[in-house]
Structure formats: C-alpha cells, structure tokens
Image (cartoon, rainbow, N blue to C red; front, side, top):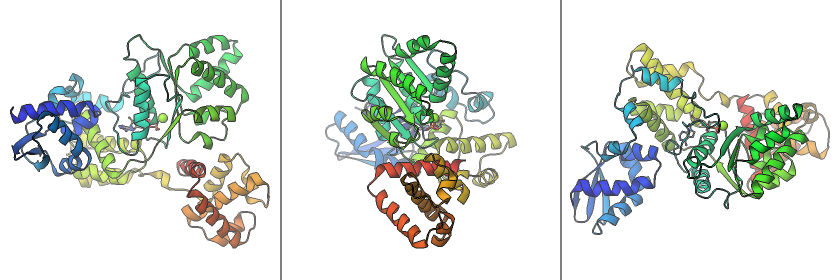
Length: 462
Ligand code: ADP
Ligand code: MG
C-alpha cells in the first residue's frame, strides 16, 4: 500500500466523524510523508495546523491509520510539502467553484457576502445556508451539537423537547435550522416548520381576530418537527401561552419532535408560565457557551475557505483576538476587512485591518452605565426602577436590588457607599453583605448564574 493509499483510506474514516467544515479546514493539504518503524509522519501545511491536529485530532488520526495498518504505533507531524490531495476531491462542486478563484475581484464573491439570505423555503421557513456541514463544533457548543445530532437520528425520541440556549450570535439559529435542513433529507418527506417566536405570536393574534385559530392549529399540529426560535420573546399574555401550550402538548403526545431555542435557561424567562417551563425542563436542555480563541480562529479560517478568499493568518488572529463573544460579529468583522480591501484594491494586511476595525466599535456591548444596570435589572425582574431605588422591603424587590448592587460593584466598580446611597439609602455594610451573598450563591446556584448572565446580556446590548 502506498502512502497515498494509506492516507486516503484514513481520511475517509476521519471524514465521517467530523463536520465538513472542520474536515476541510484541518485535513486539507495533508499527506503521509513517511512511514518508518511504525511511525507515520504526516505532512501538514503550517504550524497552526500542526498544533491543532496534534492537540485535537491526534487520537482520531492514530486510530484511523491504525485501523488500516495495524503496525502503526504513532503519528508525528511535520510542516512540509503537501500535495493538494483528496480533501479537495471530496469537496462538493459548489465549494470548489468558490475556492478555485482566490481573487477578491469576482462578482460571485460579492454576491456571497451580500445576498445570501434570499432563498428561504416558504414551506418550512428554513434557510438552506444553515447546515451541519458549515457548523463548527468546539467545546463551547459540543453538547448542544451532539443533542441536535441525536434528534436528527431519532425524531421525537428521548430528547423531546430539546431546548438550546446561549447568548446572542453564538449559533442557536444556525444549529436549530441545521437540524431542520438535515431532517428534510430523511425518507418519507417529514414535515418541518421553523418559526421565530415573534412570528408565531403574530400568527396567533391574527388568527384570533379572523377566527382562523382552527386552521392555525391544524398547520402546527401537522408537522413532524417544530422548531421555535427565541422563545424568550413569548409574551406574558395568557392566551398566547395557552395556544402554544396546546400545540406543544398535541405534538408532544403524538411523539413529534419539538426543538426550541432561547437566549437563556427556561428558569430565567420571567414571562414563561410555570406549566410551559416544567414541560421544557422535562426534556433535554443544552447550552452554548463562548468559543475559545482557537475555535474563533477556526471559524474565521473556515469562513475564508468557503468564501474563497485568502487572508493572512496574523490578520485572522487579530480579528479572533478582537471579538470574543459573538460569532456573528466575528464574521461581520472579517467581511468588513475583506470588502474594504477589495474596494480599495489593496491586499489585506494587518495594518489595514487594524485601521478598518478601529473605525467600527469592536464589541460595543462592553459599555454600560448605572442607569442601564437599574433599567435592565428592573425589566428582567418585572419591577419598577423606582422600587429598586426606594426603601421598599418587599421580598420581590429585595433580591433584585441585591443583584443590582452586585452588578454595579462587579461591572462598574462603583463604591459601596455610592451604591448604598443610590439604592434605598442603605448603609455601605448592607451593600457589602449583598455582594458577598450573591457571590457566594453564584457558586452553586445555576439559576441565579443564568439570570445574571441574561441581565448582563441586556446591560451590554441596549
Ligand atoms: P444566534 O441565533 O445564537 O443569535 P446565529 O445562529 O444567528 O446566532 O449565528 C450568527 C452567525 O454566526 C451566523 O452567520 C452563523 O452562521 C454563524 N455561526 C454561529 N455559530 C457558528 C458555528 N458554530 N460555526 C459556524 N458558523 C457559526
Ligand atoms: Mg437567532
């Protein structure tokens, strides 16, 4: 068996275990350079790929190679000459089209950057762009990803409903739509319906005013997979939750799959009725956290790949280091850099990138103020801001006030006496006590942690 044959077979095995995006990113331009004394030497394109393969995929690679040649004991990596091998061949045609032209001048490139949301399927509301193939998995989202995968395999099975939550721009919509798009490939034409909560509410309101409730229910009850995005927007109106509850129950009882996303844990959605909350908690709940530095880099790399542009590695690192909490912004920054350089007809350099990104506030969500903190805490706990400032000792107010104190101290570094003075004319020792209490409780109260995360999300986004 030649080195190429060995590696091609191993790649085939590795491929099935990875998303296409990861596979292409990391295994492109790899080859077996040598096999001696049971050690396979793998040639990889650069130091970055070497590190990544070694730390993340070593076991995988070793196992795959060993399955084909039992004498292999270890795999070693060198940066070297590669042959643009098999990974290219395995690429779907549409990707080849884009990557074969590494220029920034093509009209097609522009199109990809600007017009990509035009092909929504009216029957399912799904955007075909959101697939598993383009979804990158890292430790920050692997639980949610695995759960999503498993409902594709067994619709209405043990993960029902599946509830996925995480911050803004971290891939919830992408992931839940990927499930929909994947399920559509199943035999027997399963019916899939994706609906953002706000749209659902609009439909209910309209149906109520036009006596169309029967039809609306029929539409929802006839699906095999119902995907509801951003459930935190569900209104407090009883009627709304009731309709949703009935649709939910009908589907659930007939073993139809329900998939829900939210920006926070069900416990932290104050408008959610108890009966819905407990339904959600009866299924599977998975969160999406923040991507680490390497994963952010990998996402950027993959985006340049699929878009067919070449961006220097130092530029990508710079972007990855500038934007840490939102994948949509990460992508947006990359797009800006690429488009600016195209318009100016200049190559992409680190200096240019710094200039371009300096003009746009990076992570503007890092700013907040005393007023914002109060407003967000009040909104979140459904109180009047005035109640937080007053001396009220109502139980419903005391705790949110402590949380406001904690946030003012932690995030704004306000002084204890200042916080006390502003919030209920309290002594500074009361503030210290509140901060300690919340800090202590955060260690083993995931609900509180969730609530504070959600408040912070608001604080930095308005
Ligand atoms: P959310 O619904 O959580 O606000 P989205 O699903 O809209 O976030 O994701 C924002 C953008 O980031 C989308 O363009 C999406 O394709 C991209 N994105 C998010 N997560 C990933 C990921 N894991 N891999 C690749 N792209 C991602
Ligand atoms: Mg979304």
